[in-house]
Image 1 (cartoon, rainbow, N blue to C red):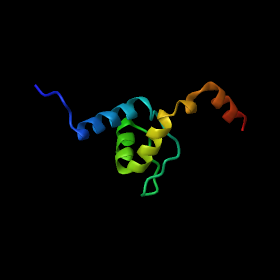
Image 2: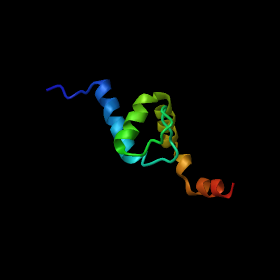
Image 3: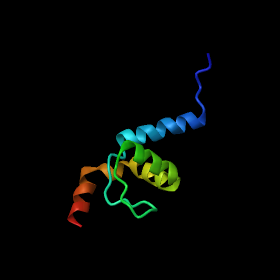
Image 4: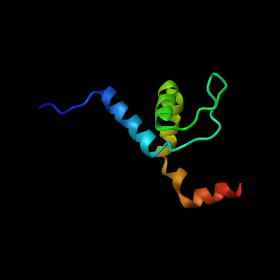
Length: 79
C-alpha cells in the first residue's frame, strides 16, 4: 500500500495541529460585519483558511524558538 499523503491532506493536518496547539485564543478580533469573532477551534480554523497570509506569519512566528525563550519574554515584559 502507498501510504503517501497529498500536499492538501498534509496542509489540513498542519492547520488542525496549529489550531489545536499553537493558536489557543485571541481577543478583540472583529469580522467584516463589524462584530467580534469569539474564539473557538472552528472559528480559528476558518480565520486561518480565510486569511492564509496571516496563517503563514503566525506559523513562522511559532517556529522561531527565540519567541519563547524566557529571557526574551522578560525583556519584552519590561518594555
